[in-house]
Image (cartoon, rainbow, N blue to C red):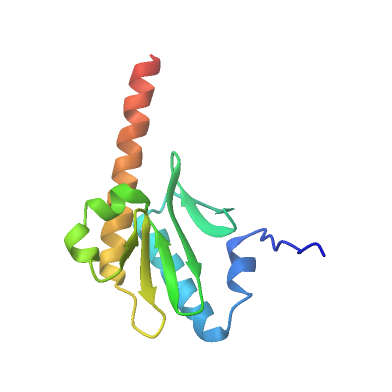
Length: 129
């Protein structure tokens, strides 16, 4: 029997598949990311909400017991002390669903990722000239 793979066309569509409580958390997280990276574009990548600016900035996703936040390994390494309670693997943070998300930390990580991607893009641009 073939399993049907769910695909999402937008972040709104992704968020709409969750309970109202989880939708509120995801919408707030989305807004925090938008405010921290106003020039970033939204898309679905790896079937997760993603923000990109000269490459992927961050992804996020909801699971049964946590919200996954994926700021790339560099986003975790830069804030390794602050993310210790949430760090689960090389590029993943897991925020327990029954606790408030650390929005100030998320803002800092997103802003760091924006600066990092812009720096990388500028460096690449100089090399191409």
